[in-house]
View 1 (cartoon, rainbow, N blue to C red):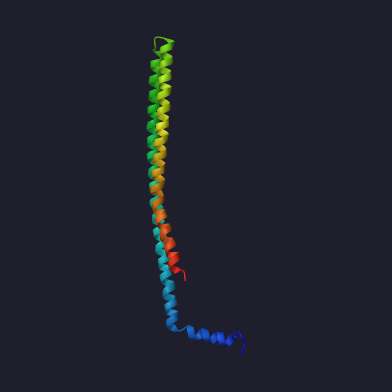
View 2 (cartoon, rainbow, N blue to C red):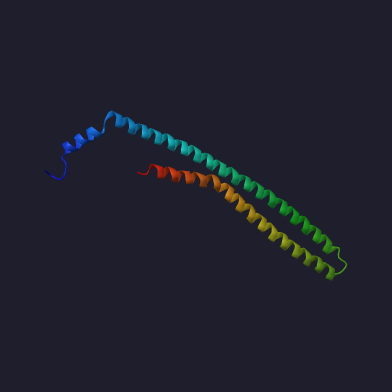
Length: 146
């Protein structure tokens, strides 16, 4: 007996395996997989929109804080300039300028730290929905593995 099956034997084996019931079962599994994929894509799009919304709110808050910081810095600079120009001596004007430089440097460093904290929080919050969807995707792929 030959080690390989003939085409007729393979066709006969396939005909025995592909009964109407097994075809229906395979079709139902394929349809269910398609429904699952469609639902997953819908939920993934919702997660992406949620993430984009979080990011947009983060940009809005950062822009608002930056605008307030710039206004405050401008006002502080104008006040320091006014105080320096009304100083009674050069020494007093230099002391005012020195104090202004020190305070503006501290405020700048504080603002940069505040922005770094803000963007760290926004990044974490914005990636949470996407990370959750990715985890669910990995679970689905693992479930379909033979």
